[in-house]
Length: 340
Image 1 (tube, helix red, strand yellow):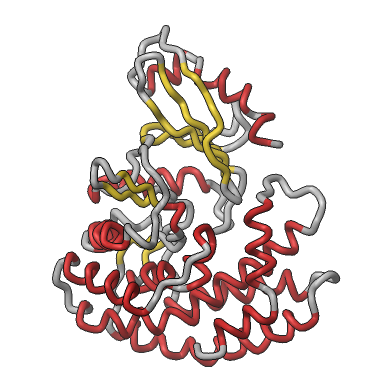
Image 2 (cartoon, one colour):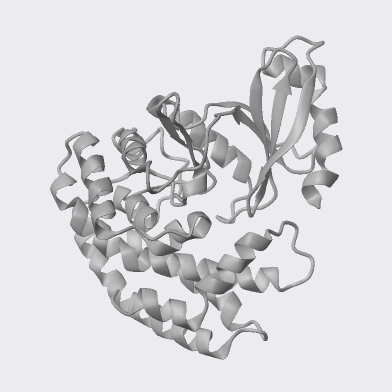
């Protein structure tokens, strides 16, 4: 397992005087290093100093966005978002790939639990409103990916991902047939983005807002959105639509929001969101994004299925693979796209 293999390298890395100096720690400070969590393209370790200071040591192993410097992109996004107060503060970046052959980011450790859809919707709404409520300058956001159109971007990504599945000899015939129909429908539906392009509302959005990318601390009454692997400059409705759809709520929690829960979440978000010209049309924008967020979810799963079934994948998570298999089952695909 890569997480275990690389642990010794992390322990040696954080014992260097240069690293401690970068974090304003004494040269004799020692860290206890332990495995924390694993994503599809990253490994995360917990650093705990002798004096009780805690940090997250994040190692990047690949890029969903096909970026040459994925870890620097995440670091810049977190530096920008510090002003929101609901994202982890970044402290250190090493994108040299020398001591450790992967990008390294050290950020704030936030104690708490993953988001619970039954109890934490109001807190999540407040966090989203803080993130989407800040309008950054063009200069500040110039490094962020900006799609040519909100639906075109997702459509193009889906086409690229599905191409890998369609060309896979082990693909499931019925699944491929359904996905071919879905992508054709998306080609027609993406024309709806002219409505959004005529009245754009651009903010820093996360694009991957599942429950385990949130840390909720009930004692402190806080909620942070912690994983900023794939932020873009885009429509806030894309984030909220992604948050409420079944492929997201089922991903880690096996939960599907009821209509009243979705309305409660959206209403709380709109109450806390600063006024802006696009606010009255937000619900319409959110509904338009649902089809494309479902498309993005299942096309990624189709691509990931080909990777998981090919020997030599660097990181693998069996719980993730089970969800991947479920989401590309013909019955599931028909259930989410029938009425979309």
